Amino acid sequence: MNQFKGQHILSVNQFNRDNIQQVFQVADRMRPYAHRQKRTKVLDGAILGNLFFEASTRTRVSFGTAFNLLGGEVRETAGMATSALSKGESLFDTARVLSSYSDIVAMRHPDAGSVAEFAEGSRVPVINGGDGPNEHPTQALLDLYTISKELQFHGDSIEGMHIAMIGDLKHGRTVHSLSKLLCLYKNIRFTLISPQELAMPQYIMDEIENAGHSLKVTDQLEGSVDADICYQTRVQEERFTSKDEANKYRGKFRLNQDIYTRHFQSKTVIMHPLPRDSRADANELDNDLNLNPNLAIFRQVDNGVLIRMALFALTLGVEDIVEKYDCDVQWYSNKQNI
Image 1 (tube, one colour):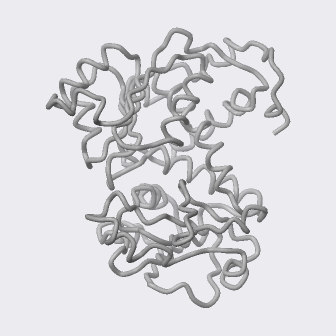
Image 2 (image 1 turned 180 degrees about the horizontal axis):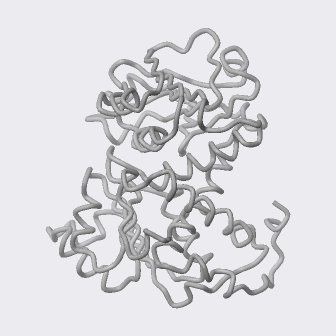
């Protein structure tokens, strides 16, 4: 049963184990289209309003690509300054107007709770593409999907795994949402590594412990971390009061091949929600990790398209008829060999 048809997707709190599995199963079926082995026109004529009022490249393009791959069209608004919001229009009014032009909306906004507020005025389903430091449900789903696939490759599973989350855990909405999803599983060990000032919010740690998981909090990356997953995050400069304040923590926890070899298992999967900060004073994930087969950051990107395709298909109620609108790919594409 499709519980997502016609519904907003605003928070990971909407998900349970069963409907997460449904999303993942639909995502698996999207692989031939993402790899250009086939194409589908199941959403031919449908319009996505891609509204990104906060800077974004990867997530914005990922949403648009996912919709295009299902045969739909995309209309974009990027940046607050170019929108009517800069003229004092309310989110409710903006939603009423822009949703009349679209069949579904993907939205990012710098303020927590803003996407839910927008959804109250929307005439069509709204998918949260990130609301300030609050939540990023599609990122959490693609991260969980990636974790599942990576662990399967090593013969392991989510339940019983050990995940180390490193960096700016205070402002990182990706780790907030991912932690909530992981609370649906059993017997997970969490190691949270960050400066004390950038520690995971207490309410998230409470949820982890209340779900019966093991939790270790430290401000040092030392010794051997026998994690199955290393989830690195960048310093969220845009959430600080000033660049100077953010610079106090930049480069605090760097990861390169030497550090990886000294501190982690040889099979530890390296993840990052991207963009990784490659500036010399930060260099969160060094380029010398690029050839490490356990670096999964670009597989996360690929999986993001699959998950967002699945969410569009489910929300618009076409998940069972995607294959009926198959057609051949006419152009050369080396993605077919992925």
